[in-house]
Amino acid sequence: MATQTVDGIKKDTETRMAKSVETLKTDLGKIRTGRAHPGLLDQIRVDYYGAKTPLNQLANISAADARTLTVTPYDKGTLQAIEKAIRESDLGLNPAASGTLLRVPLPPLTEERRRELVKHVHKEGENAKVAIRNVRRDGNHHLKELLKKKLITEDDDKRAEEAVQKMTDRFIAEVDKLIAAKEHEIMQV
Image (tube, one colour):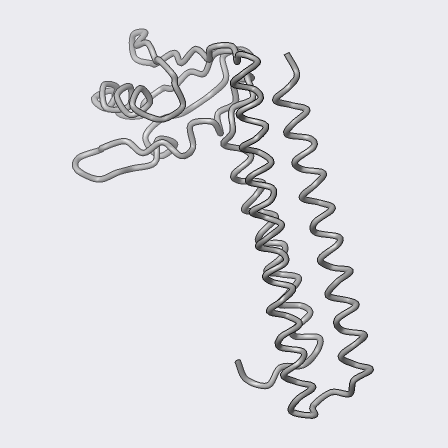
């Protein structure tokens, strides 16, 4: 890394921390909560003419009601391939063909499964916090390098480290909020 300014280091640190939070939001969106939402099938890949293609590029996915998703393929010939991909995914879903579309009923979550999901959510949250702390460490390391090269004063270094710590606290609080919201969503019957 070329000589960077304190502001550049702080901006880079904040951007990387924000990316960690965005990644967590994406990961939490994939965790089933008992309600049908189209994003649940986002990570499914369908074998389409030899290429693993995201399901949302091959079909329209919508929530028919709180417990059922409907998948309408753009190309009717892909219906079997889509059904097979959903069945073989680790989501535990059993789609049923209904004419030119698939109905994907979501089984109700058991209490035990809800607790497993909550543990998984906490693990994802902890991973995000570790990523944020690693970004903080990197930012502080770059600041120390500027100090060693005498490009900034010790006071500048202290102020910048305090700013990085405030950033870290803010993003970790955001992660805690996301985890608590997801936990509440999962445990609602």
